[in-house]
Image (cartoon, rainbow over the protein chains, first blue to last red):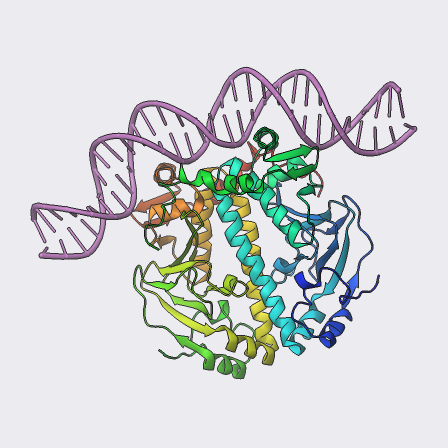
Amino acid sequence: MYTHSCSNCAMSDLCLPLGLSKQEVQKLEEIVQTTAVKHVGDKIVRQGDKFDKLYAIKSGMCKAYRFDESGVEYVQSFHLPGEIFGLDAIYAKHYGFSVEALDTTVLCELDYRQLQNLCSEIPALQHQLFNLLSRDLYSSHVNPIEHFDQSAEQKLAGFVHNLLTRFQARGHNSLEMQLPMSRRDIANHLGLAPETISRLLKRFQNNEVLAIDNRIVSVLDVGKLQSLVHCHALEARITRRQVSKAG
Amino acid sequence: MYTHSCSNCAMSDLCLPLGLSKQEVQKLEEIVQTTAVKHVGDKIVRQGDKFDKLYAIKSGMCKAYRFDESGVEYVQSFHLPGEIFGLDAIYAKHYGFSVEALDTTVLCELDYRQLQNLCSEIPALQHQLFNLLSRDLYSSHVNPIEHFDQSAEQKLAGFVHNLLTRFQARGHNSLEMQLPMSRRDIANHLGLAPETISRLLKRFQNNEVLAIDNRIVSVLDVGKLQSLVHCHALEARITRRQVSKAG
DNA sequence: GGCGGTTATTGATGCAAGTCAAATAGGCCT
DNA sequence: AGGCCTATTTGACTTGCATCAATAACCGCC
């Protein structure tokens, strides 16, 4: 565990330093620590543990999941570099989700109390933390809700497209992605059966939308993929979800 | 539009003033304004409008909804007194949802820029705003995800139970609730067909869980209602969602 | 109080996706 | 390389909920 430099981090523009001056970033660096490297299956936080730190992913990939009162597992999200997790535990004071590495992963730790104090000192940091919270809130409103009564095909297409977009925002300029999570995790995350994921991936291959080699997925046709996300919505769903006439 | 007193507001403990000293609440009051009374169908914010204010509900009820790119409507949430909306627009700079009154409703307006400045001045206010954001984020993670692949029965039971809990937290000490939203709005919100809502409400009546008189719902058996939320999870869902063995 | 529109209910039918079951492929250890 | 365990795929069958269609209740309004 050593003090880490945000100034040199490739993810700084997606993370807390965005909008801060050089001096302010230096102050932030003083409270950031980089964890030891995590490996597949290593737990970073455990559901129920006392909340004290936020985590930012420097490299690798994580999954967040929880067990409800009946012991049923829910895979909530997959986190990519530059993303911060733990924000939803500020209020509850305990982590509501376990997070584990899906891959070799490096993380930064931020003590929340220290961060909060620094936010009072540095308005730009406060501003950015509000922004990050708001962004997460927005996407948790928009994404799952649109997944809500979509067909399985739309959900999966949306999932792949969303991942591609996020990879690209992180400088990954290829259409090939390595998805380190299992089919079961994907299925659980989308509220589908693993068998359905299999069948859909095959369908996407047959339609030349994707090429798949085990856990490596290549997007062959971004346009087709994108259209799969929305198109179906105009057939069914219209009685339930009424379509806007005017605005 | 007149300056409004948070000090006397019955909802202050659910809202921004929580944790603030008397003097601090006074400072907050200076930037809070109460809107004119809104009536059924009145729009408070429109999807796409430039974001500048947060809103807190003083009394009444609102629904938040959006139209996606294909023009399909999604009812995202119903808001009760003491709840704040607009938080998810901070990052995006535009409201992602329209909000309209379902009932006679009084609201407080908070200019976000002023609030942000005040947060830098008053650490307890910053703290509380982080808490409110975090709480919303947590519940948007936990609730919809648990709704995700529940049966229609579980979803609706969960919805009613959630509303009851929120009403009770607001001092409503009866098991009778007036739900001002249409069946279609409920259906849309839960990702079900309105017909399914009808049939389920009838089933709940037959099972003596609820008594329903049009839009007035009385919970006859809280225990049964609560058990409906979870019970089914142990039959199906187990292959998809695996159940925890140890912890 | 009766009329027209919307909202809610009820019944009949079909299909998408879940479930069950079995085969195949991968990954990892020795 | 072989063996074992887990992940994934594939096929056959079932079902919960959506859809379609029609009736009934509610609400505002003249």
